[in-house]
Image (cartoon, rainbow, N blue to C red; front, side, top):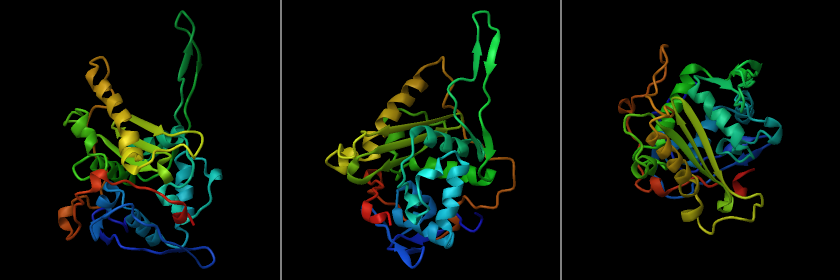
Amino acid sequence: DDKIQPCEVESTGPVIVEYGNGMQWSPQNSGKTAPELTFYQGLQQSVNTITARIMKRLGPNSADVVKQTAANMGIDDSKFEPYPSICLGTMDISVFEMVGAYGTFVNGGTFIEPIFVTRIEDKNGNVLEEFTPKRQEALRMQSAYIICKMLERVTMSGGTAARLRRNYNIPGDVSIGGKTGTTQNNSDGWFMGITPNLVSGCWVGADERNVHFRSTALGQGANMALPIFGEYMQRIYADSKLNWGRGILKAPDIEMTIDLNCDNYVGGQNNSDAENAEESVNDKDLF
């Protein structure tokens, strides 16, 4: 992962990713974007072609690499095939799996399986049963930290979730990151949120795929799911009895080999429409 720097500048133009026996995949962006962006900005603004360029740079087995990484982060990889489009989230994944996967970033690259019950006690406080979650190393500590910092950018000015801080009174002295997501025909709206000690996921949709919003303006994840997460976090921060979701994301005590100072790079532009843009995956982009 040292070969890909978050501050590198790439074209947002069309890209072709080859796979299989002469097959090609070429995704489209959901709206207008600057001609060049850093990888940081590509995630911040949900630019599909930037993500596709990362897949291309990973080589001919990129989809297999992504699938295995997803499995290491607790996602059931038996439900999808290793096509390049999985980098845009084209497979069906539960909120439970998504929260576990995002928790891997916050936990320094270690996947810890989410569990509902940690201990059972009787009325006298005697422990009857304890449950230990599954743990496994999924990412390098540096990689997990970099992703957390990139997710923070999504909630800042120019990101698709910038309204989270602006509209929901999120304290300025806390680290909070997230990612919006929208599927074809606005059938699903997603928002995944992270803080140093709390990971949450919100999905808005229906069991039937033909139930959806009529426009992206209403149905995108930033408008469907983000407001629910925002209200939820607002109540958490307002409750003095709770101490969840607070704190600053700290860098790991290791030598960093990836540059996070984008001032060292030339290029990359802000997209004034990014806060209203959204990542939308169409069937024609799948294969």
